Length: 352
Image (cartoon, rainbow, N blue to C red):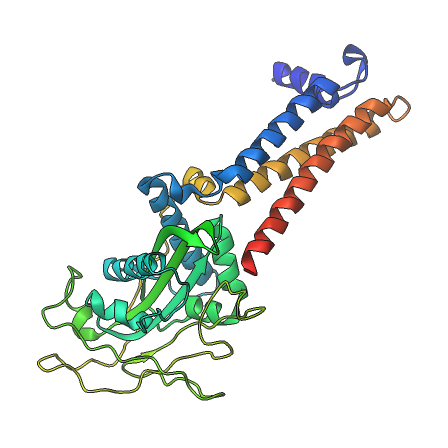
């Protein structure tokens, strides 16, 4: 314990043995910290913030972090967590792959394929479904925050009618720059489907009704074959981060005859869902959220040097060294500048 105290005193407390100059506030320490901070920022800005480009393993970490973000938000708002559905993961993967292959970012493809095409393509027979999209983000927590800050996307995440979801990502080009595309598919399976294991498309795939935009002010009924889709709050038609029917809160699928031989769709009954269990650990969260991680590092540096300055100033009020105080202020200022810079870059990405 005495050794710990001596070390702490040497680095943080001004006294005779360190010439009233705590080692953490000396020029050498400040220089090392500043060089490391600049190197970390350059690494972040050079593309380290796109972990999904590196390997499928890192891509899985990003998906896991997005999954955790959605379920954590639901649980925090007293909404049951969602079960990860392999079929919805496949539907989401097919959707992002199609956006990358056909160079678009929208709920409906240039070929006229609505989100519900991908549900039917993998054999997901639903009574309630929805979709959130994102592109050009470098941090998975930023994706979750952007969805939660949009009333329509938040409504999808918090909708208690949904019991399952699946998330997928794909790397491609957006507005001429490398970017990550994200699709989050929500669903509530029919009772017939819920009773069977999710092993792949069923022998008789369910018919999926096309989506039709409702009239202004119309609320979508919560009945069989009703689908909910998040709409975008955009700055202009060309600067969209989430793309859907602007100004609408739902798209209603009209009733259509079921495919011959297929069983009727059972009314949706909310099923019990498992409690939220994180799919990623602290290290994986840092990898999937590089901006959040590096900003946390800068915040730690700022607080550490602020703490050191307070001790230095008030322990020996009569003995002050301007160069020591200036060094601490430099470290704090640099950390603050990088936090503001990274936040600005994030905001620039959101309004694209």
